[in-house]
Length: 250
Image (cartoon, rainbow, N blue to C red):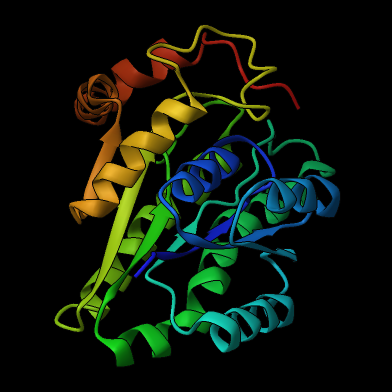
């Protein structure tokens, strides 16, 4: 039987690369994104792909998409919560509060909204994988990136909680923490991005991680070492080093 795969944030970047990779494997796809035109174009390009123009922040839209997919194809094997946004923010600016809320709503609550409509069906079937795309940015707070770092730290701990909740159900909860990926999200970063990978390369690695049900993974492996080192740095060293680093533009 072909895999049945749900992917949010599928209209560009990593989500699009994942969709193309799973399509090449013959999977039936449920593709979710806010941007209808590129999403529809992608679905038209791929065999056995269905698209849902929905915002992950909208509970009703996500539940409607899930109901439609389950009615058509039964329970998915894999649900990938990939949708995410990133912008530079500074707490001193009142206008950035709205941006902060939007990033948290998309990157954290949006992940919950992506998983929730499928969990009962997956638990009943006793198999499947819930995959959350977090980030190594969730390991430590980055100057100018407080909203993004906070959202990814929250995502990592949310996924851990969900993994424990699903323990013994047959449903795996997989946390993926990529480093830098060459996508529109990183295109305007005014700093060097070490070990940056293409979306296609990261997608291939994620597919392997899911296949082998590795519950926690950092991509690439070099960034796993960097992340561990940063986590171990004393605050006074970390603060001094990163206070002079270039910041993501507001």
